[in-house]
Length: 167
Image 1 (tube, rainbow, N blue to C red):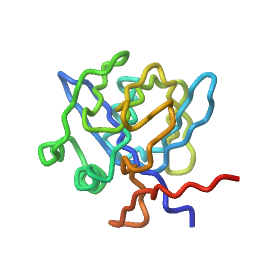
Image 2 (tube, one colour; image 1 turned 180 degrees about the vertical axis):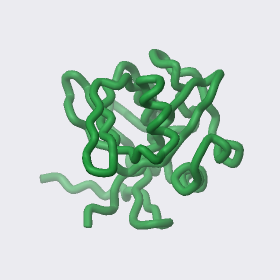
Image 3 (cartoon, one colour; image 1 turned 90 degrees about the vertical axis):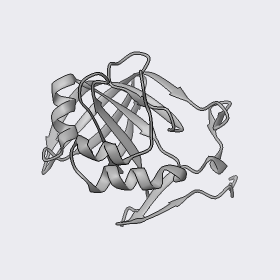
Image 4 (cartoon, rainbow, N blue to C red; image 1 turned 120 degrees about the vertical axis):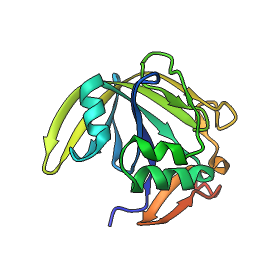
């Protein structure tokens, strides 16, 4: 009943060691000051283990052009799946977890808090740095024609239209 939701890529691990990426819809801004983001991840996920181990993660904002890679990272498990994707890992500015070059934006997070709720863990990350494509975020406002990805259901995705309603 809450869908469609934005879809993000959660990067975990270390660039010169082990890296994993999972697609996640359950991502939320929790605070503006300090800038905190929450992501809900099942303990069954490899990403969960890496975030616990390293205490950091990157939230990458994919475009609709990346939908096939998003599907792979969301429907397959473990780092072996990354051999099938076409995105490029690049060093982040402030954390050891890499960012994704092709993403519209990358938010670098250090774990601020962790809480278990039911069958998931809410990882709260403090955003310590970020990068973004300047042509996508003009004056810190998103250009909807950039193709921000939203998940409708199972294997159905969409993007936003450029229709904006002013109230």
